[in-house]
Length: 121
Image 1 (tube, rainbow, N blue to C red):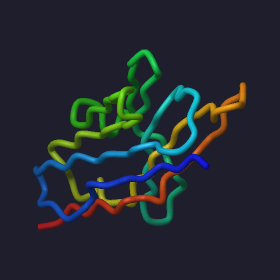
Image 2 (cartoon, one colour):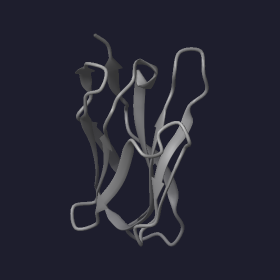
Image 3 (tube, helix red, strand yellow):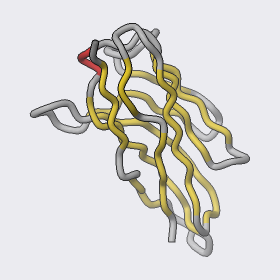
């Protein structure tokens, strides 16, 4: 059974920083792309940052220059460093990973349970 577990959310003032972590656990053969999504009030879940297994990254325009996605393949973990946070960044944040479980040859999509980020004075 493969699971993703997020941590690091919380309350921060505008202009502040937070670092989210997401660790994959279970019987894993390989992890391909890993990503972070968020879902604002009344909005669909939106992709904000992604990283390939080789470390190539891409970002939504709304977070480019402020957020940095990285991964530690030895720990099956992806991070999201969030700087210069704004009130409009407030949302639950979800980790997403494309994982090939042990004994399988195709990838499946897994989601974390979400971690709340609130930016407020």
